[in-house]
Each structure stands twice: as structure tokens, then as C-alpha cells.
Image (cartoon, rainbow, N blue to C red; front, side):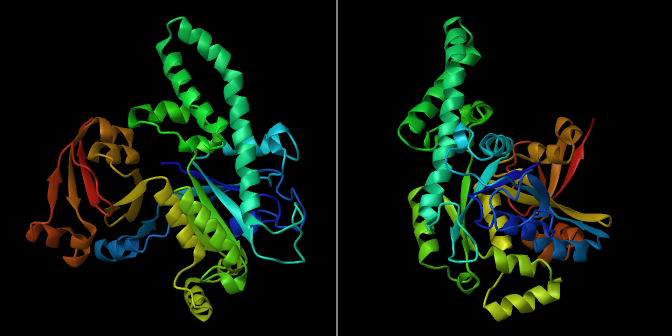
Length: 365
């Protein structure tokens, strides 16, 4: 699955520093002035997955291939972006094809780094971001409504269904709530996504704190976390500055550096994991002499759907899935041990894949 998360925020909140750390590059120019990111920077990041190492060791795999997630660092948003202020139109367009948004809030004070609004208030920053995104969605829907109404009156069932969903979105937006707050059934999920509303995308609040607050956060990040709880969203505390330093170290040095800071893991690992959870995703594995690999699927995916992530032919010609739970695979020393212990299962088309399943698919095309 190709997954994209947009890193969204006002200028100078640490978006590009965070992006640089995520991609372990200096591709995004992190500078102390608005709009230093003119074109969207795109980078692929490996999803942290320690279980792959264990699988590769047992299967004697020559290569380890983790799942990947794409992050897009887009130009900083300012008040009035929905009506074209700053780089508003470009900013908004760059979010539309992403699956989720990571809303970065500045939770640190630094007189050397200017704030476009002239103050440090993460909740006000988030209000500006969400207001501009909601205004853009309102304009988009209001522009489409007349044509939808006309086609629906003419008996077009698809337009009637879209009109119903657009009306639900307008109701939420009109009440000052993001479109994601609307109650949408599973049957309508695909058509809902087709509306391409900015505020219908799952959102993760990222609290960018100072180095001293990386472990436990601070009063500013506490405000954002409380807001996330109110909005039934997720929040992550991270120091983009520390993460950019960690990104330059090798694996052994990272562990030592984190230990000196009193941190158990890199903030980026938490960020990526939370983005994964936000999108309702999980991982299954394939393991053999050639490679040990992690595959991304939605929670609730069936065995044929999981097979289709590897190749559409696997799903079309699906016969069965040979499945071993990760704990059994590792605890019993691999496939042979799992077979002997009766932990090797043959599952059919109705099987719901579980996180960590080690799978091999039988198919016929």
C-alpha cells in the first residue's frame, strides 16, 4: 500500500527540521523565514519493525525489506491560505492526495526563531490550520453542490449518494467542526474518500518541544495533548532538533545518545507508529532465504486482500494462506518447528489476517 502523510503547520514550527530527520537527509531547507519550503519535499521512511530482524535470522534471509510510509513536507500555511494568502492554494493542493495529516504545533520558546504570528500559542496555531482547511473544504463543496443537485434530481443514483455525503460534510463544517467529525458508515467510506476533503483525513497532532522537554513534554504540549483527547485524536511529543541529531548517528550511537537523554526510543519511531495506527493499519510478514519482508494492510483485511498487496494475481487466484503467528515462528525456530508443534495453519478466503502473521500464499492464475 502506498501511504502518504502530509506534514502541516505554520511557518517556522519545525516542519522541515522534522522532515529532514524523518528522511535522514537535508533535502528540505530548514531556515528561519516563512516559505523556505517552496516545493513539497517528499521522502520515504522505513516503518520501524524490530520483529523483522528475528524473522530474517531464523529464515537466514539475505535481505530485510521493511514497510515504508511517505511523508510530504509542504509550504507553511498562514492565516488566509484558503483565500490564496501566502502559498495557500499550492499548500492546500499538496495535501489532497495524502492519506493523513501530521499537524505540527510549536511547543517551544526561542527568541532566535521567529513566529509568523508573533507569539507562542500551539492551540491558536492549530486553530488557524484547521480553520483554513475547513474554509477550503467549504468552498470546494459549495462549488460542487449545484451540479450534484441537478444530476441527483435527474435520477443519477451516484450523484444522489455523493450529494448526501456532501451535505453531511457541510453540516459539520458549518458547525465549525472538521469533516472527519461526521458519522460515516463503512458502506460509504469509499465514496466519502472520493470527496477529497482536507479535514476528512485522519489528523495526528505533533508537539514539537525543546530538547529538555523531549522525554516528558511541557506545559505547551500538555495543552495540545488535552485537545487531542477532546477531539478523539492522537498526539505525539517530539523534539525535531534532537531527532535531526539522532538521524545523523549510526544504530549503536543512537542507542547511547538516547540513553544519555533518558529516552527509551526515538520520537520519530513513535511518530511513524502513531501514523500507522491512525490510518488503521497493521503488518504481516513473509520470510525466506531471499528476503524477510513487512507488508502493510488495513486492520480487518482478509487473506486474499493481504495476498493482493504483493500482487493482484495472488488475490485473483487465491487458494489458501499458510500462516504462522509471529510468536510461534520465533519461539519454535521457524516453519519446520511450527509444523511439528501444530502451529502451522492453512487458512481460507474468510480468514482475517492478524498483526504479525507470517504468511505464504498458494494461488493459481
